[in-house]
Length: 498
Image (cartoon, rainbow, N blue to C red; front, side, top):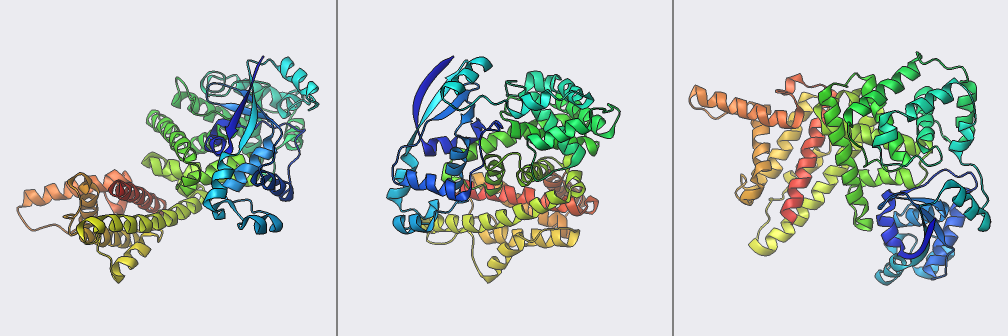
């Protein structure tokens, strides 16, 4: 076993929070908000904190084996989920992180904690270390539930030995980590998402199912989903680096399997989605307080604020379901099958609409400083068009009104794309062709030219919908189309801002 003490500024730790796993040790109490506030008060006053103990999993991933509650409090303050106590607020002139003046926020960001990094440690060495630190040597949740004999325990161990867990995910199987993840997955599929999923609940599940049939619906669902995961990730799935993400991806695969969306093409698309999602998540988390994707931040917060709580598990699976349905038309049926994912889609539409409003303002400000006029002409009608972008589309009529608003705002608003840089005109032309497709607005001319335009317009619609015509789409699909177009709009505006 090797140990090395490192000083780390807490904002650097916050930006890497997606790489820190929080194993479930029973000895750690859950802190009250008052206790969390005292910790933040200590940091603001520059007082020393006890060491944190991190076990090194690989070059970029760690387990926090002591200091989880302190770490969670710090993360909650950074994300404005924890407000200061009244006396602390008066002393520092702020009630939350974003209200701190620049000097104070810089001091808070730069506050260093001591982290003892533990590398190449056996379980026996860790236990001896805990004894000497007077931290106790409790069994963790996985070790306790693995001692409960029965058919369900054996089933879970068998699933944990399958290639997806044993060879492909980026989580070492230390102290029955893979087994614990499978038990939690079985718990969710068998009993639904409950307020808590800690040792007492898992113990009850295994004891109640000492006799468990592998031909049961739960067993078939789990085995079908893990087979799909093995097909989706034939080589590795190292982007999944902690228990919470592993559980979430397993639950997502179970939803895919339940809807029979398990073709070879679907498996490839699922792999691409998972790789893309966790890359985007890591990139956004590393931005720290400058991060802007609220949905990704909600996902990460649903890990750091208590990964086994029912609300956290539910938030993660609904975000993943919505984003998978948006990622590929193959998975659009998930949105109508799981109502909460539809709620997540509606929320994302509203957030993208607000982000677009802000981006248009920023683009106009930059453009007018150089050209003396706005890039996108803003009128009362333009403001109404921006508002209409955020109204969820459930049918062909609403989809047409959404496209009309986009056409007026982006295509006509930019002088029929004439004020757009040539490198940024593709999206503006997409908007033009989408509207021509929706409104059947074709220029008069030779019959073969009209046919070409119909084909072109249909191809643009398919780019965002996966279907050839709006008439083929259902309510959930119209929301997915809207989300994809709004995501493309945000990317288009961000590129213009640069």
